Amino acid sequence: MKKIALMIALMFVAALTVTAQEKKADPPKTDAKPAATALPSADEILDKYVKAIGGKEANEKVTSRFMKGTFEMPAMGMSGSVEAYTQAPNKSATVTEIAGFGKVQQIFDGKTAWEANPMTGLRELAGSELAAMKREADFHAELNYKKNYSKLEVKGKEKVGDAEAYVVMATPSEGKPDKLYFDAKSGLLLRRDSERDSPQGEVATETYYEDYKDVEGVKIPMTMKITNPQFSFVIKMTEIKTNVKIEDSKFAKPSA
Image 1 (cartoon, rainbow, N blue to C red):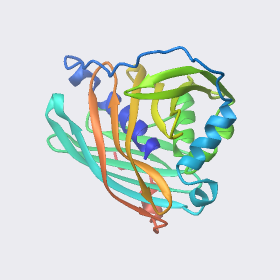
Image 2 (image 1 turned 45 degrees about the vertical axis):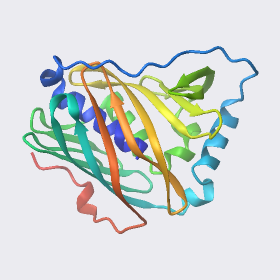
Image 3 (image 1 turned 90 degrees about the horizontal axis):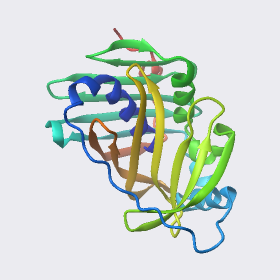
């Protein structure tokens, strides 16, 4: 779910930047606070995170997932539905249907990635966009931070809402780093700041993860709040099924 939210955010930046540029929203504020005690290492933070979401064994037991939910962009009066199909090791397909706008798709078949929406049409991703998609499509990405990022640095401690969070800068071998905020108490991921390339240039997004629920032994955030300088939207999951059979056609190249 955390990966799906970021994918959808990037799709809508590509599709709606021109439409939404007059609808700018102020992003939630995060107040920095100096750490009073010695910081844990990145390994310690990530180990606590894996335990918080159910542990390595429980996560590895899940090899496919279907998710269904709602999409809301209140400032623009837009709403719709979201369906996401993910399969180990790294296949992903996300389809968002928006009333009055149409279908938005982002698909990765394990090697090739595509985006399709009514405003920009169909395009194949390459370069840093493709590299980012590969990381996001990793089904067990929560277990594979060391694999997907060449450098992990603990940068301090900040507030995310009312919670104290450890900040980890995760730098990939290709593309801009992600800034990850892990709850100092629970260990759960609360926020991710990302910068990605798009047809409209570099895009910065903040994603907030809320309402974690246990689904077949793995904790998943049921609510995502995504914001960038152009617009904000919310994704809420209403149905999640694990270890389901997913047809290969779900990961095929979208029609133009």
